[in-house]
Image (cartoon, rainbow over all chains, first blue to last red):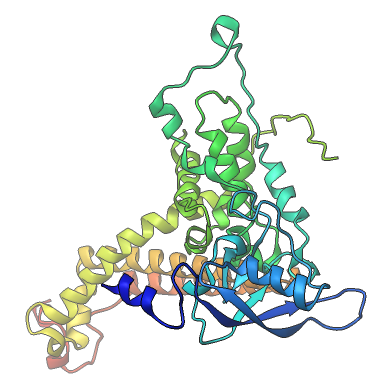
Length: 253
Length: 144
């Protein structure tokens, strides 16, 4: 019934995706201009199938070529285009514009808690430094059986399956109020990265990683606010992973 | 190019106060729920309820070892739990190291003073002060 009505509607001819005008307000910052960061408004004609990234492309290609942002795959896999959209950390390429309140302006700004380099680009180095410091790579102490590969049961694999989904977009870490305070905290993403190997049956450096995370700025600074779990575009239960690392520290793996 | 250093097992730190304080917060939190609701129910609900509270009621409680220990445990846990919570907030939000140290020190001094004074009151409380009107005192005072 509604399909027949929609296709016969005069505004939307059959087979055509409806368009509407969205107001996108972007936080602009150019370090070379000497100006403070400011908001700039753009009116963009978008399709109902468009995502925030498509609107940013439309602005950059048709209105203001100086708009700067990161993106690579544009399909939610590479984790380049995490940004704060209407006050929430999301991937621009996974956020449908029609799912937001399009009667109001849509605010797009860089991730909080990392230094802004230009427009929507932040310096990710502090984030990657924290990730590196938990040694996020397989460190087996044994030679694999038959000299070929390390077998793992379905149950053993499922133990850390959730944390293998991380794409290092920094949406969780930059939604964490403890990370915002001084940036000394490892942040949720680094703990997720550590969790992925601590609970991997093939890895033997779990105690080293746990010792690193037992630091003053380690897992104990987590206040269980669940911001990270809500921000994760991959649906990883980040707060649960952090709690499992805490449990491992209290009780042993 | 990113060079990741060869991993070296760090020297194990024997003791991390943050870990034990985190565990304390969980344990004391559960205990405090029992202690505080037990305290509220015994004072405000059981028997005559809130109307029963006067000097005699409190004096009577502090003459009983059970309630003395109940209140002392509640006092210690609540003050340590509360001031440690304040300490984590100070650690999170105070950026200047000297200010942070002063505030954490002040929290420690206040909590320690309240614990010492409170414990002193609970165990040295005299339920039958000399010269007080008998109808204000617990019933066992006249018997003694």
